[in-house]
Length: 132
Picture 1 (tube, rainbow, N blue to C red):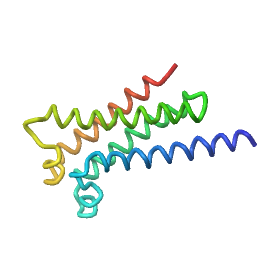
Picture 2 (cartoon, rainbow, N blue to C red):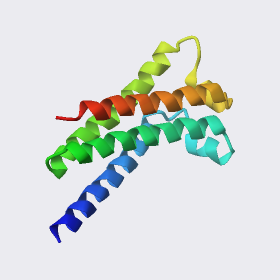
Picture 3 (cartoon, rainbow, N blue to C red):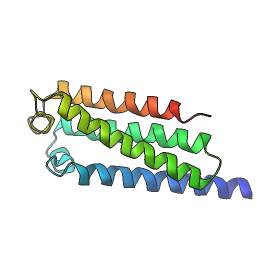
Picture 4 (cartoon, rainbow, N blue to C red):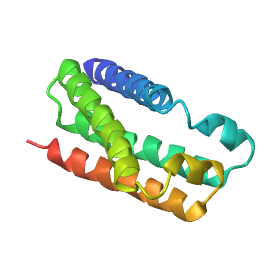
């Protein structure tokens, strides 16, 4: 029975953290209306948001795998969420000649692929950094 309760607890916390992470991304980037743009069939917005979700899921999966408790998972999952958000802002600064917000709104798919890939790469690196 304990096995099933642990599974449910870690799954529940993982889904909660994923939802919170996506919510924090939306709050941290209020000028980019990704859900609205996705509703208008904007592929770049879907790639950007999808990459963020997958990057977060990779980190949260590693946090669940390597954590010694739910609190440990929550701490490392939160660190991963904030790391992903910080990297997005760093990418905006690094691409000073080009506005990511504008590229997403204009459905510049090459930028969407780069943002998707960046989110996955950072998620992978953060996830591997969580191992003991």
